[in-house]
Length: 315
Image (cartoon, rainbow, N blue to C red):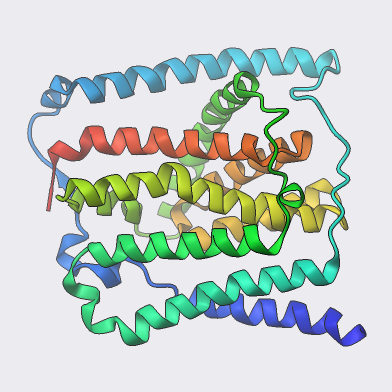
């Protein structure tokens, strides 16, 4: 019916708006004075940490690998050779089924946010335990909603056509490309007088003392988070858009939403670039495992750096 073409998008926008307005941030779960994290001591002392030394050398290795891969990609482009094996995008999904799934997922997020804010508000200042558990429950709900609402083949979950070697090449080149983007974002932030802060996850990792909670959070960052986000943004949302619009427009819309929901104004452009790469990989392979691999690798490098600096942080 015609009214459904208006009703489903309207409900989606209303629920998404409610999520953006009500989504609890890390500041709700810990005291404000805990949010500020600084470093002190001699900078040379940092290099007594084997983990930090390994992390630095890993980043340097990936940087030079990325430079080499950019050259390889340029040569391939000139020879008209694909970076990844390309498959025609032919994922059939019914409109009504997609809208119902999207509304179901977003409604679950909104309800959980409202429960946390209105019923658990007195306990929000008790520490970071609730923050970690909240994120874990939220991601499990989204994952369950997606996997139960749509068949796996429609989300692009396949064991075949997984390309770890090519993916590492692409990601290393992306890291190099992100350097000028990060610098540009920093200067734009200064021009707009935007306050630069640690990412909330960085703050949480610095603050956590309990090893069990830290392990649970790292599991979410490295595995659960990338799986949920890639299934939703690439396997579901991008697939739906791609059936109706061009790759460029679909990627732009998904990447913009992806960046907005991360709520990082000072890191907006790098997040968009990462999302564009993830959409490109999914477009070419139509295997969501490839996108999950890149996303997890990106998060792994970030967590590795944070953990290597954690012993030198203080509140």
